[in-house]
Length: 274
Image (cartoon, rainbow, N blue to C red):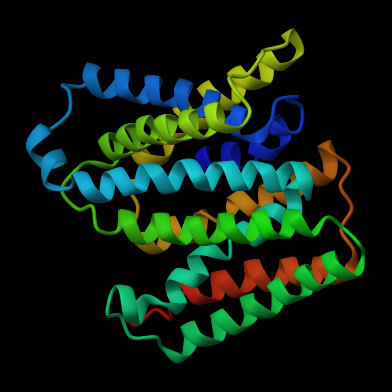
């Protein structure tokens, strides 16, 4: 349910007249309040554990805020389906540099996965340039993928603080980061009546509720199961954008989509031994 909800982020954002950073500002504000209240209701923050890991939690919040700004800008300037596909190259970047960050061996299977995904990214990025689509959208999407990879690496350093508490603090930190950025660039958002339902949905449902569902399920599933289920997000985003926003992908972009999602899943699936 959480991943299907995440897949509708671009749909709601496309109906909001505000700038990308202003949408993210409201999203982090609403979601941060929801999760913080939930943590306080469940007994409060574990101060000792949070203090031990305050640096990666702080950096994670900064990366999250900047990540969402660039991703939502890519939604607006490019389109939802292509921005989502490029965004999901982030985990593959982590896989590629895992020998450096985590001292994990890059197996032949994982290397093949990286090559497949890179080929898919080349198809999509090349088609964007050739067809004359907004290349700034491509730039924003690539930056969002890099920030997504950074967020994964940073959060891997957090092992003592619970997932729900980490999410609440990172959302609060992201709100502060986006608030500073928005005040320095555009100013506070001016809300219109038509925007309110979509802002409420992206804040309460796509952030607060979805994060609660995600971290609740995360604790009861294996790492491989979580990794495979996570690809419901880009797949559902592609389907939603096609049926609800009537976005059309070229044949080359469809090949790129298959390569990115298929290559990423190929890297996650492991041969079972008896």
